[in-house]
Structure formats: structure tokens, C-alpha cells
Length: 195
Image 1: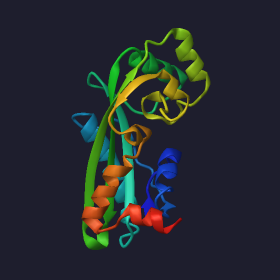
Image 2: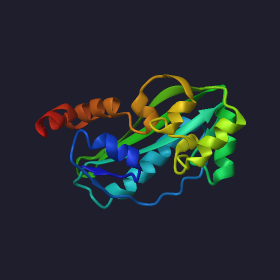
Image 3: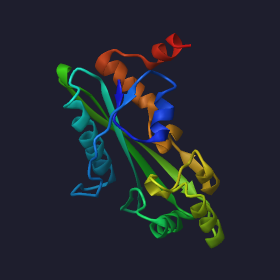
Image 4: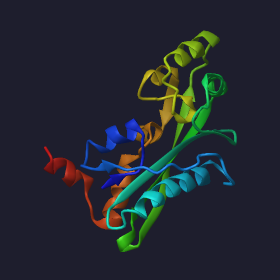
């Protein structure tokens, strides 16, 4: 399997279940012309995966993209510290959606598949000092919505609804179900067999 993602979070999640290598291609991640957050995440996931799959047609390729959406506004990765502050301040004392789209390819078998998972996250009412303290951790760098729920970002969160791993960046249970259906590959057997 090839993971077409540079995300350390995705690497850590997937490495619990199977062996794989990481191969990535750079894809422009601007909001482009997608109508909504779900379409953006799915489009970027597909673009990231197909770019790698075209060069490895016989191999299974998995790619993913995560976006945060609040009241129709899409938050990707912050461009700088001020942008991260703006995002966290906007998320404070409110709920937002986290959408992770993922794509599965094996071009030799004509498999090109994209799906998504969605979760809701509710932030505490954060003070300016709370936000600045979080920004000072630098954890926001490279994170959709400017936070990492598996790290210090967990301290910002009041509650979640849905799949925690989706919020981290890889909804592994749903991916496992799709792999089983598309390719008859069981991550459960992969995990059990490697212990």
C-alpha cells in the first residue's frame, strides 16, 4: 500500500494496521471552485491520490484531505500565526464540522474511489490568553482549522460528535470497510497477523 500523504497523524494511524510506504505529489490546495467543504475535501483527496496512482498503477494508493467548516466558511491550513489566531478565535465558543475525504486507487483494477466522513467539534469559550498560549505551542502549523485535537488542541475542545479519528485526519474504520468491500482486504487481519 502507498499512503499519498505527508501527514504524520495519518502515518501514525495507518501504521497500526498495515505496512505501507509514503509517496506524495504536490497539489495546489487553494479552495479552487468547489461548491462546499465536502466537495473541496473530496476533490483535493482525489487529486493527491490520482497523481501518485498514475505512477504506481498496480499498487493500492490511499490519499486524504481534511477541512474545517463553520457557517459556510472553509478553514484549511493556516498561512501564518495571525491566520491561525483568526481561525481559533472564530472557532471559540461554537461548533464546527470536520470533513475528511479519502480516496482509494488501484488503476490496474480500474479502482478510483472517493468517500468522506464528517464529525462535529465544539470549542470552549476561549479567552485571548488561551488562544495566544495555544498559538505559542506552534501546533497549529500544517493543521486544518489551526488545531490538532490529539495534541494540546484537545484542551480547546468541549465535546465532539462523531469519529475521533476523522478529526485527527483519517477515519480508519470507514476506510477499512471500504477496503473490504472494494478489494477484499481486511485491516483487522493485517493488524492481527502482524502481532
